[in-house]
Length: 126
Image 1 (cartoon, one colour):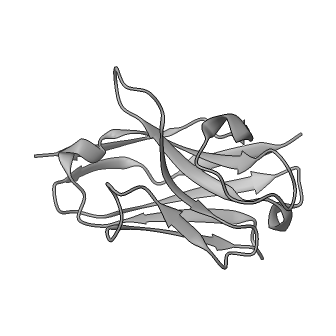
Image 2 (spheres, rainbow, N blue to C red; image 1 turned 180 degrees about the vertical axis):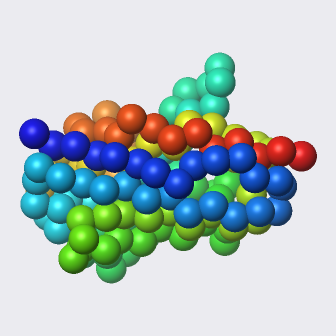
């Protein structure tokens, strides 16, 4: 059974930092592209950042480019999201997701990810 477990969310003031982690079990982690999405109240889930299976390429939404960094630790089956200079508009539930096909290319479309974590709340106060 594939499981994704996120951790690291919390409440921070604007300008602060948080590091999210997502531990994956039940599949060969190194074969799958990974991504982070987020969903704010009353809004649709949106792509935040993605990383290829080998970690050689990363992709970011324009709204977080230059502030967030996605990385993966293939030795420990974990993907991270370092979030710096947080803004109130970053407040959302953050989800990690695993691409639905091994060795597939990166995508920002949520429909192409078949396993999701339970979500972790990030709240940025102004």
